[in-house]
Image (cartoon, rainbow, N blue to C red; front, side, top):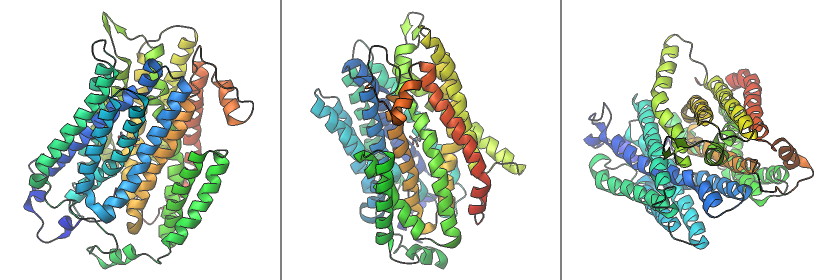
Length: 522
Ligand code: GLN
């Protein structure tokens, strides 16, 4: 996501359409982006809901292989938006990016709908590339609708987050419902995701000239855009032009750390290079207060990785928990297990306005917690969700199918945790990132998702699976995880301990984070 300013929002001949207030006080362009993003997320979450189930139930992959592929897929889906954001900022503009992304994503889903493993891998690859062009640029365009000083911007993002989750709610219901029905089947589910993305594309093409005139037509170049005040223009140029050297140093350090942490795994080394390069540029290219804030962001991002690595069990191990260990019979109706993937998004729609109101009312009394403290709370709530998975898991260990209550309760706590961490995290990044590195550091925020999702997939591979033999590791973390995850309650205890542990340790860092970000209100 970029906070650089598009020509359309700064030019004196700003189209009047962008200042309209027809949509509950917001421009109708926001509505168009809401719908487009809603359909993209419909396709993403619809397909995500059935991916692991398709691999395990239909293709008969073993759990670890399926969740590891899921981890790699979700990692790459959050890695490419960093590149797509960069390309849009500098070369093609967000408007074209969104169209390219939509076309490639829907092609990906339709390819998945075809039989054969070549089509399967090609489909996943297309979705990964398409999401790179789409995801962060859709958010950037929301920012581009408003003038720089427009107080409606935050509210605009909240509305947009609702669009994300309306799609996230409907996608699993439709795609999962089709995929797991007797009548249709898996490939119908994948195709439905493609149809959803196409509808989004058609809607965007229909409305963009009318409601988003000039938005994202040209790339926004931080170093050449005329920003409203001198300081920002100077800041945009940066203290020196050594980004390449800084990135190179960071990449080498990141590669070594990735190598050590991943015991030589090539994906870990690649990840280390990307994260290291980004942090190298940001840390070595700043000084004084700005560098302190970048350090604060690094600390926060480290803890956020713990959050998403546990949260992302949703699409993998918790999805399988719904499929294999939950009683899905409601009278004569058998609930498709993929429908549990809609719970989180549905609850976001319900609770997001309540959380927003809570922060505002606490703010009025000067009691609003700092962002770092909200994140600690988010991690603790996530841990709270896993309490239900541990208890539900203990019932499963006794050989019974459990009530859907356990999953729903866990997802509810996870939703509350997400609301304390995810939307506030986005605005934290825009507040503390030095202007010239705003896009880069937003990219780092997404990279935390990428790293975490890979770890999540690997951890989900330890799901207890009767009848499957895990390759016996004799030492190291893998052996430890294998020894504790012989039972469901043992497996979910890993996430409970990790979430509460991360919350406790992050709490100790709150005073330091406050000092590091003292130059802004965060
Ligand atoms: N649900 C949100 C989205 O899809 C955030 C998910 C995330 O950051 N992992 O955009």
